[in-house]
Length: 178
Image 1 (tube, rainbow, N blue to C red):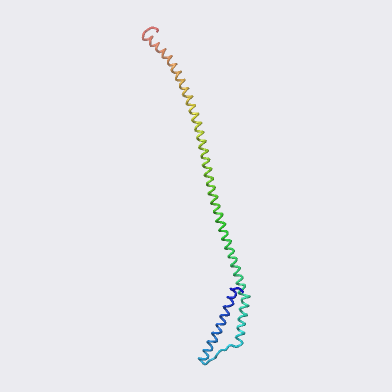
Image 2: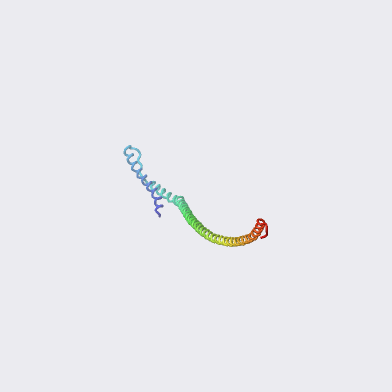
């Protein structure tokens, strides 16, 4: 028998025997002191003890053991559920950590891609600005050449006109052809 079963059986026996001895001792003392009725154990006491033992045995078989089995099964079921809950919580924590790690990796990769794209865009910007500066310098040089040619043509044309004006002025001042 298990320790648990012995405990359930031993308590009633201790109670019965202690009660029996207390009755015997109190009956002897009260009977002798008061001169009244004294109670002596006879064979009916043994029958009562046997009846009690059979009753305890029957109750243990019919009532206590099935209840203990149900309680034990319930305890195992609750323990199993608690274990599953702990497993689920552990699994959730692991998945949450993996999710957080994935998010951090994605952020790092995103920032790296962003920096790469910014670097490429900066290089493209520099190339475009360089082309624009080159075209602008070429156009500026062409415009300066054009302006210089136009200025030279204007100077020549003004020089011719100045010569004509000088002749006209000289003729008017002198009154004769020069």
